[in-house]
Length: 225
Image (cartoon, rainbow, N blue to C red; front, side, top):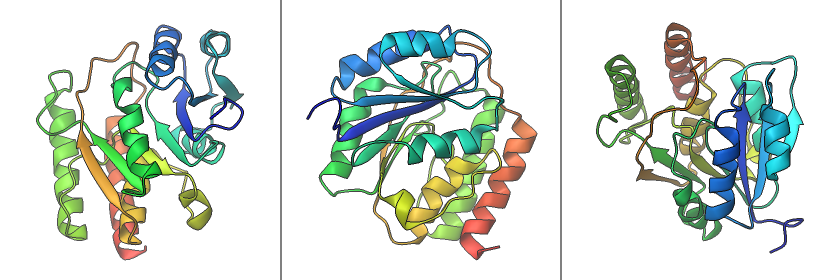
């Protein structure tokens, strides 16, 4: 496998992550040296320059269009058979990239969810944990399958999924649909549990807006409304 013809893309989106992006890319290169690294960036700081110098392909999306459009651009721009997503803030374990990609490449899964919530992460505030747990419980009841983490930023997807089905990019709860919709269409889901580290930099998440979009997205996928 050559860099021009990779089987795996590691895709991230970023907004003002200059403090973490260089380290994250170096960690990805150490864990998955033949993977294509792709960054969709909406930063005002030096994030895109640092990422490009470190070896990532950088696609600029500026002015910012929000989480969903940025993530969908990253997913649909991926090369190869599998795209592994992770956040650009150094919270996710890059040493799991090849394990997750392997499940997809071997046909064992169409989506691999790296759940942060086997137990409460020490780095996650209680209010975030309880909200994540509650929404995962609602989804588990509605979809008749135990789900633990609807908002993990680290997943592996078979890239052909994005030709087979459409996802609504608008709103902050795209990860919910990216997990539940393939499952609702009979695609193979595998869950692994991962550690979740303290982020580098400030979070831009709006908790109330995220909660509303999460509930709306669960119901939309389940009932088609």
